[in-house]
Amino acid sequence: MIIYIISDEKKGHLSQTRGLASALLERAMQKAPNAPHAVHEISIVGKSWFSKLFYKGKDLDLPRPDLILCAGHSTHLAALSLSRHLRCPRIVCMKPSLPLRMFDLCILPRHDMPEGKQPADNVFLTNGAINNIKPQPEVEKTETLILIGGPSKEFDWDAEHVLNQLTTIVRHCSNNIVLTTSRRTPKDFVQEVTDACPSVRVEPVDQTGPTWVADHLACAREVWVTQDSVSMVYEALSSGAPVAVIEMPRKNSKKKDKVSRVTRGLNMLTAEEAVCTFTTWAQKHRIPHNATLLNEAGRAADYILQKFPHLIP
Image 1 (cartoon, one colour):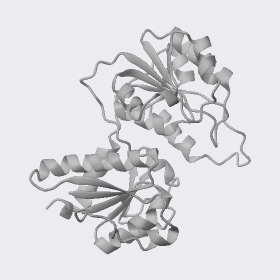
Image 2 (cartoon, rainbow, N blue to C red; image 1 turned 120 degrees about the vertical axis):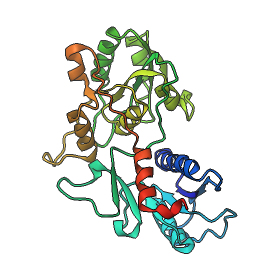
Image 3 (cartoon, rainbow, N blue to C red; image 1 turned 45 degrees about the vertical axis):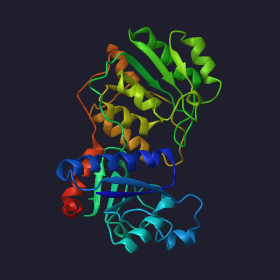
Image 4 (cartoon, helix red, strand yellow; image 1 turned 90 degrees about the vertical axis):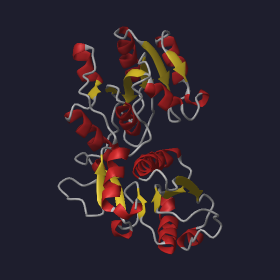
């Protein structure tokens, strides 16, 4: 199976398409071990709207694809144009800005689907965005991993509120604790958490490499994630570790009755006891582990091969 990924080079979008492509190739190699299998990433960064609208890949010297994947609004036109020219299915790993019917399959997080509405035939719902995190059962689990986000469209940043929760977590934790920040974390928080929790090993995001989170999820006995970082919650669940949420104050919204996609997704996970909040954890000082393991890349890959059986002769 030959797969093209149309890329905007954004980390989150590549995590989705690479995770799905990896799961597809894994299955393709099992079913057709002697056939050619490869993934090729095609960047459209710098291309104009017009060039993407009529993109035919004339600049490429690659084998003809069986499937084209894309994620990110800026990739849609190029993926549609190239797939029409090469006559292969196009799959988008997000809710597209274009009509759903323009894609052969749309892989959507279930919190993007309005409540009560049934998905169309070309829509496959996942628990959160697909990612490329896999359980590593052979790795010894020795750490409590803490992933800190920052202010967002929905959540305010309250350093004191976050630090109060962290100090309580540290007091009741016997594991080695490793904490990292994100691009949105205020710069002074690193010093604040170092002063408040000297036993915690703090590794700021600008001192970590591209595989840091995946490497530490592999050896995490449990994971804490701030409430704003929902994508990291899904990645943590994909690692197989018990996951809990550090609470953050929600911004005042004029639309008080409207629940955002972020909140809806997190509410679903909490209701299903896939994750627990700090408030729930504080009652017994343990994270319930109900064996929730997300393998959305694998689940989506199985569906794709069922829907498009010609992809593997």
